[in-house]
Length: 296
Image: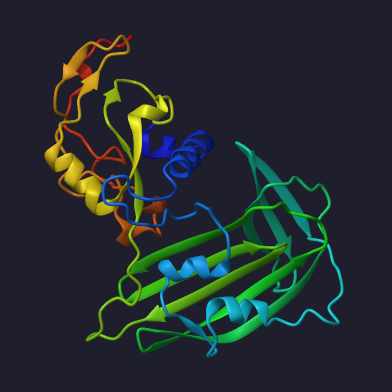
């Protein structure tokens, strides 16, 4: 199986969550807070997201005020068309399908508690105007008020990618039994730079063991780094390759010159999750596997 296919496995998702949570979703070299697409991180209040999206306004209100101002009166309870629940360490990843926007669409969030039957009120809000850096972006919101207790911890996830002149931002928030799923799309003009500027977080391997899957490492071998510090690590620190019995094969694997060691190309997030197509997500490359014993 190719390395990029391994990075799509549930086992790597579990390991990513484990390392990011251990490191408090911050770069361990520079201390900055960043995002990892598709990864939910805990928040104590909605305004915690101001650190990642400072000074945004939604229809003239800040993010927290906008969410708190939604009126649920008169909305009836319903059930999803389909529900999937996946266990991830101590978290439950929910995928709910609703038919409020034909055909049925799916929404994904994480929660502390496992609920077999979910009931909710649902509201869809179109034509939301997001003001950020003096630019207006239109988007929409699907929001849910759950009848059941989803748990004590609040979570959020930011998904962002840029293709050509188009930027797509998704913001998902689970807060006090309410789930907010925002979606914005921005097409910038030829004389404008990109609007959103998030710092991606990567999981860095301090060393590699030949033939070992990316999640089959002790946690001490893995560390959370932002993309900038990840590049610096690969430029300033040698990444060795060992056999399964820790015999040195290569003292310094060459760094991929396409992704500069991060293993990801965020501008290609729309294809294969942005995994670098040169090093296949490893961040290093250039060693000839045929030189090594097949039982390593």
